[in-house]
Image (cartoon, rainbow, N blue to C red; front, side, top):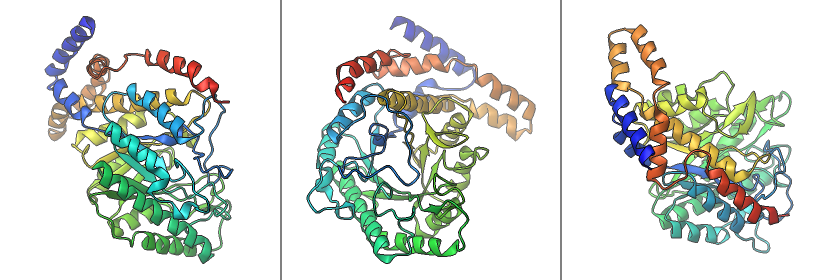
Length: 419
């Protein structure tokens, strides 16, 4: 501990020489919650027990031991993950990660009773819950279409599912005293070029309008809509494109969700943040790592993650940008995936908070781009790691990769029994 404090004090002095207050940076970091995605723990399969295959562009690679088989196991896994991630965070659910099913009740009729154990668990731990409808992995996803399907009966099923999940989200928000984010993403699209691009989008808009017609208080729920460039089975045409959902969000007063795996690899998600916040009060990020395409890899500290994090904190956007994680990897220990990715998101935010922004902006105002570039590059080698270790220690969270020892013990004692 003495070494940690000594290294931190040394780093504090170095950052102070650049005009950066490390204590202020850590205070802000402590106030930024991540929405930890529960679906990393069950490979996005949910617990309906109906045997629906994973469809709608959702694919999880790998068959590592220990996938959660029910919501109780998933919560147990999440508890370990949360204990290894510094800060106070939320949990995000998908609409099929139910505690229990009732005879004759399908997704379009879900109520808070289907998620009551999640609610009790969150109350006990004083954490918030978010939830998203699951417009995939179901027999009613016909020809890869849900809310935009030409059959009104199929659309009706999915509209009712969206309405049901919104009501559950509002109940979460009311009971937990923190508004639940309810994010809408649908996999609708075509593998090859459609003859009519307009009609499915018109139907999607009508479906969304009907879902959001239920007036639910912003005090309890925040609605978001999420686009996608393409997916498996929708390589040539995605109904809910970025242009569609950005326009819909602006017109309807909903939040737009930017998923960092849902755009072309050369597009910068970080650059979109300030552009959108010129016109919208809030936005949601789904942070994942695309490799060549939307592959939802575990977060690493790369240029894209650093850029996203920097844009959130550089302009004091942390109260306007909601950060949710959205990757799923079944080829490695799923708890390790949660912890590694979440810690990397927090590290990237800390690096952004420790940027000597005042000095950089002084150079910029003088049109001194040479000194600006020199300082931007020098910042990369400043001792942020010592500040991170101090933050983890302050939060009673294991340093370095020592968290892996706990995860491997849990794998041996718990996950290995799940056959």
